Amino acid sequence: MFITCAKFFRRQTIQSQLFNRTVTVCSLKPIDQSRNLSDSKCLRPGKVLENKNCQMDVGCKVAIVNGGASGIGLAAASQLLCAGARNVAITGDDLISGKEAEKFLNSTYGMGKAMFINCNINCTAQFEGAFEATIKKFNNLDIVINNAGILNEIDWEKMIKTNVNGTVNGCLLALEFLQRHRSTNEGVIVNIASISGLETYGHTPIYNATKHAVVGLSRSLGLHGHYDRTAVKILTVCPGCTQTQLLMGSMEGRLTQKQLELGAEVMKGYELQPIKHVAKEIIPIIRSGRSGSVWVVEYEAAYQVEMPHYSERRLAP
Image 1 (cartoon, helix red, strand yellow):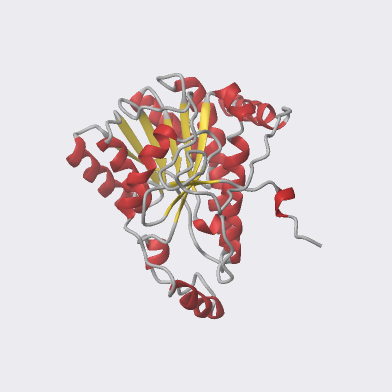
Image 2: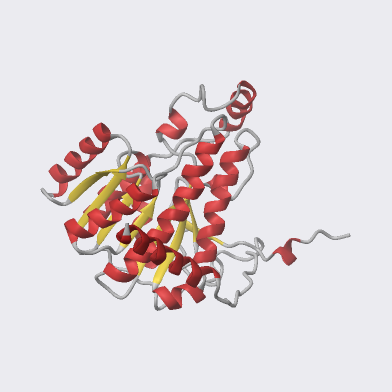
């Protein structure tokens, strides 16, 4: 009981430090679409805003990928090890697929390189236990990727709990463990959102809301006021339509009939990109992305996007 209480008070301390602190916010200016893309100040695919404090060497680092037993999460874990990461822990709630993923990573990159942790991110105790197990096994933690997410407009409460609450808890736990157990002077959190967090799609309104929440959370926690205190940079990756089970699996039971009809029309304009492409683009984002930045990965090299200040979006009378 005492240990549980101690953990609770640590979490409350982090929340207090995060949300009871005055932070100066710099307004972001919108991208001028009329500017020449050759202008070094104009954001374009593959362009990274200069920040001398944002370089992160993936080599010899320890990472945990939540939702890492399949899809983008598993591909990201593979790319981390390919880039030289020392160890990777992957979490998921499907024991069979998780063990298969662990076997694949260890057979590809070396025995003991990866560990699967059976974990339901909607259970706070299990989620915290996954971080503790990673530290116990690998001693350090430098990179956290929050990838777990579902699309289910019918059981929307579960979707909100997984996509929003799960990411919030993932960030709070990551901030706690990265500050105490990282092996270098900087830690990294990558939250996987979606282009649905940047746009609106009528057939998945609640899913869109959850991904907008992930983008807003990441940008807010990524402000310099937080980074200066924690030395943990927080990045957002928004993949376009990708060949994952979330889109390629049956939508029956996850969308209403009307949503299925609307979705069929919307998806006619999209081509699904390979999972591996998204995962490969995450590595340079981890290396060079500045805290609070938002990145789109859609068919080509990842590119950074800016959010205009609301005053810049005012319509003319």
